[in-house]
Length: 113
Image 1 (spheres, rainbow, N blue to C red):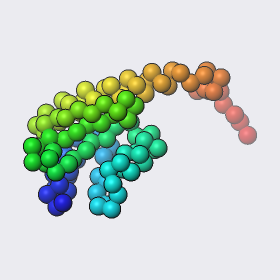
Image 2: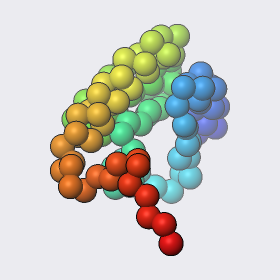
Image 3: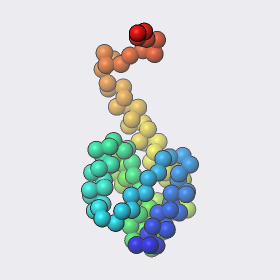
Image 4: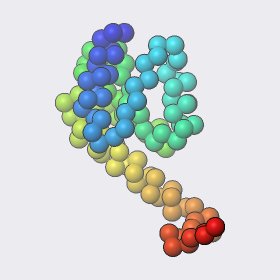
């Protein structure tokens, strides 16, 4: 477990610049519960580090919208991360357009009290 935490911190250092990272390493919660919680919080993607990933120096990128999972080597993580998160951003843009215009306010609509 200690080696996995160290590897998770290495992954964090590599990807934290372009994205916000939270390492959920409490050791008590099962992976499925962690993923469910992240989906309830509308976290669009997460990075998984398993014992096998550690041994092979890979990580698994998982997208919440389509449940697509991609294995990326540690050395290629930034490139793989960028491609994955570009897809996530496109999903968020596409879904934001589906919100009815009546629910949106223009920036010049100001309420003075």
